[in-house]
Image (cartoon, rainbow, N blue to C red; front, side, top):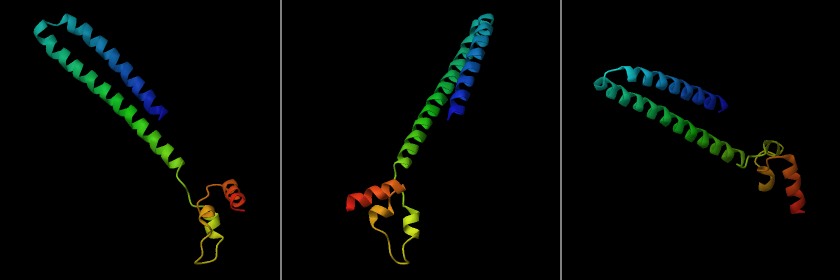
Amino acid sequence: MDGSSEWQDELAARVDRCAHELEVLLEAMPEDASGDHARRLRAVRARVDGLGASAKNLRERVRNLHDATTTMRRANLAALAGCAPGELPPRAKAFASTEAEVESRDDDAA
């Protein structure tokens, strides 16, 4: 995600430089043509700003998905593999995410 913010900053800087150069050129143009170019310039700037907002929204959605997946309960495959065929360990052991959590749940049950 850091690369996308660097890319966005670089893109914004380039657009700013182009906008400045275009403003200088527009000052030297006849007035009838400059209005059309100014509208085009505003449209490009609006699209870049929209891309920035979309990138920010996407980063936030990815962060939320990451946070949600790290808090999900996971099956303890070691506990499941250690059981006899057709049997399952107690639910607390089957979904414990760490060995410490398994031991903690064993202590709570006792």
